[in-house]
Image (tube, chains in turn red, cyan):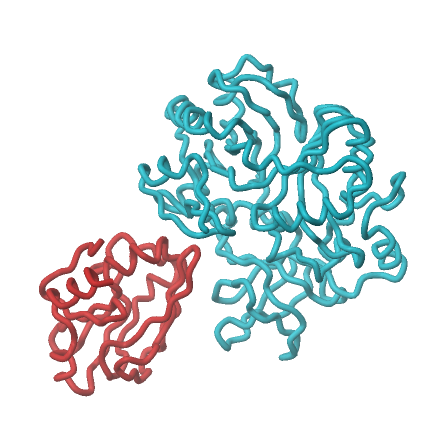
Length: 129
Length: 360
């Protein structure tokens, strides 16, 4: 099941999404990811100011049964994390593209965004899996 | 080969997420582990546990034969009573944990873990002095009905007076018109029953319970909720919290081992020796006081040194805390003792607490 795949976002093969908002990029996990994980009970996030590298692990998401790594879609500096998730991570399940956002980063190379999957390519990836 | 219970099609029709468990295709969840967990704590939940194994001893001498294999003492029971017990190796470690049912001195049924059934059966066959065991696993399906509303739900479907079946007692009678063993047992910490029926009747029984339980908020529940419920009770899971390398005393299950029962049991001498000498490590329940969830296999550290590992761990849906179990040196096993759980390279503090974790 592909789930909800908004057209205006970019995606990774690891099921993160990225959304440009001015000079920053908001990152979260997709509807497909949250649905596959089951109920998310814990998220481990990087500190504000941390430097992330595209494709590298930046955190961990845990559901009732599984532990999964989170990978950064882009290189850049973390400017904000969704602290509400630290007390209650359920927004990742209920609103993965909204209240369930994970962090904002300031990309070091904005052209990396163009290299991510668009909605159609991500949908194809899910169909193939 | 993956095996299927008689309820397999029904689970799929209900949209269950299926997983391989001990060679069985079983539902891990239908809607949500947390919602299913809470249905059992607050209302009633149904579990398909047909994958469990049933091994029978029947005929003159059945009681004596079976009783020599298990740690607890069926000879002190009444007919219609069930006992939690261990099957131990000669070193006092677990071959399995079981529930033994005494129908009469000539009919004993031992319910074993699905993952261990073949091993247990071979083990019993090799050691039974007298009556030979018969594998009856294909003759029984099993549905667990668990939760504060379980008794009322089952009572509406049966003429058997359930007030007469106390905890760890059982009776035989029809439920929804289907011949059942009605056993007041379970693995959730809640009141309820485990219903054993013929495999061909399982679907009708499951549907009748779902239908009749609608007003109670009944939910079909998967292995995910079964695991979180039993962890909150610190009920041991074979392969995680108990195994052949840890003795019953180390697991805190000395209470199911009757060292002075007539005829003894396999592993008795090793336990008696260990009891006299004192144990070196103990299975404890702990809460993580820092940030993170303990998981099976994570190291337990004291002052940076590895002293054990997590055997079971979860975010407890009812206790609303990250909880776990693990074997630690006995000097770290007292309530209030502290150590760290290594969670992905971080040492996260934890404290030994009184168990069960969940109390009403």
